[in-house]
Length: 262
Image (cartoon, rainbow, N blue to C red; front, side, top):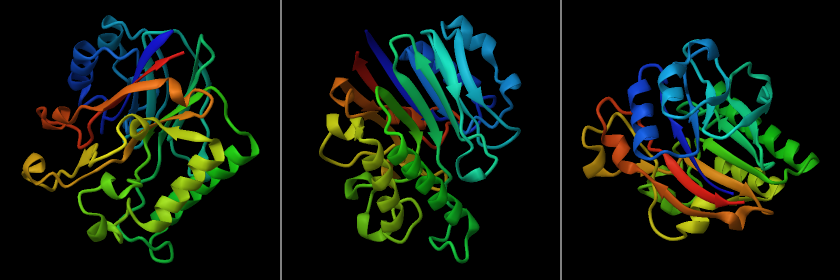
């Protein structure tokens, strides 16, 4: 079975319903995982997505904030969504395909502006979220699973536009990278995107604050597709559709894709 999966922080699924439909129509991934849907589940606009073949959905939502959803052309079973770090946020949902692959869709907290939990509660919440993920995967190592989402960390030097300038900026600080690496190692996760594209700058997010996001190209790779080591080698054809960042009224994130032969 071959299927393509995409992950995209949409920054409001209702506001950008048309952009989601455009991506579904133009690219047609078999599974599309969205983060920051900012909608209760019952208000997610399903009709247009279903008309394009996405007849299955598992989701967790809340009004105005957070929210994660998996839209699929393939049958998918809801297998849970955990409240990581007890934040009461809709930041995780999991679904299982008929071939036994479990897909985890995550929206890790951004962490605020100050990289110091003593003065910034949000940064502490982010680290606690990652620590709980690490401990969960150490206790129960996942198998035949794919983890995708906006993890809000750019781990490698070439995952940001300027490594030295961003070392003290939230999303690229050494403590965040260390926490994310521990999550990855605990679960035996393979970074599929970088396995397929091992060298060179690679970004999936560009700030709204930059009036010339494309020309300045001050991006970060915050969005990821991982797979457990038992199926990691099955992932191929990874890409980031950076042109989507230039669509009308876009999200500040671009969708990330990978194809799996399983």
